[in-house]
Length: 374
Image 1: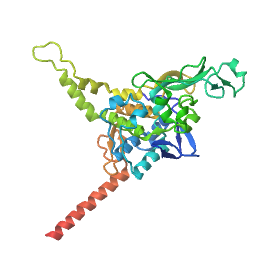
Image 2: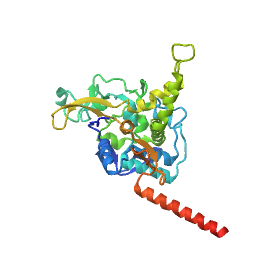
Image 3: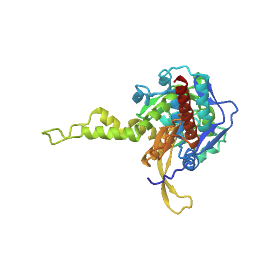
Image 4: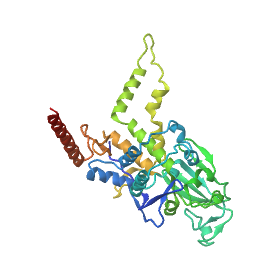
């Protein structure tokens, strides 16, 4: 397929994360930086023998032995408060270390800006906060507090923007992935901000999603993080060539004309479910399109923006699948990798060499053992 031109694929990560109160958050005084997931994806095609960034999330899922919950269709519409009881499990220090190491490399998944499309905050807005402010209000001073105004954060075309609303709305949140529903700040936003006291959950001036202050305060419940990671891995597996071939054969059989009938039988729920990939659609739903100039301003191009890392990963997986790339687990180290070769069994030449040496030693040991027992 045509090489995708993407812009504003910046994401935030910190050099260290910690698990505190069941939530993954930046460690105190950890240095943060922004980077481009898509630029990493494209450069990785040249420097890591085709290994895509999202395959490291698949490896993490495999190492932790995760599987999507039985009710993950409804899980996609739940809030974090509902998810915390979905997958209670005691994780070892090594497993927690693997999660935190992954986050230090890639950042958090961005589940709040992914699932929520609008956040209306309480009154007493400060002009020093983010977003557009009427120039007439600027005359009051940058530190002024407007008692009758409230900030509204809204996601448009994959990017979060803010504006003042007066008079202030009743604090509320619109959860739009995968279905629209209105929730309170306490239910939908506060669980991601462990530094905010619960008695201020409805009145706190939450920073605009995707801003620097947002990422410094933001945390993700570890159970919710792992649930979405498992869902992502499950959906990538459903796009594999083997699964697609089996699903195509099943759909073709369902559409076979019955003897004596002129119309094919209706598809059953299972076939419809398999053919529409609803969870993958929910993963890419927040991605927005916009029209912009090329870098040299010579032509108009269609570009994409995403509010979450998991959406970028889903788009990478779809792009790879359309390009004929398949995802495999290395037979030597079990690390997941993407490849265009139908014969590839290892993630690197080093792993292939080590596995061949191991098999050769095992074979030699078996022969020696056989001679000894004769």
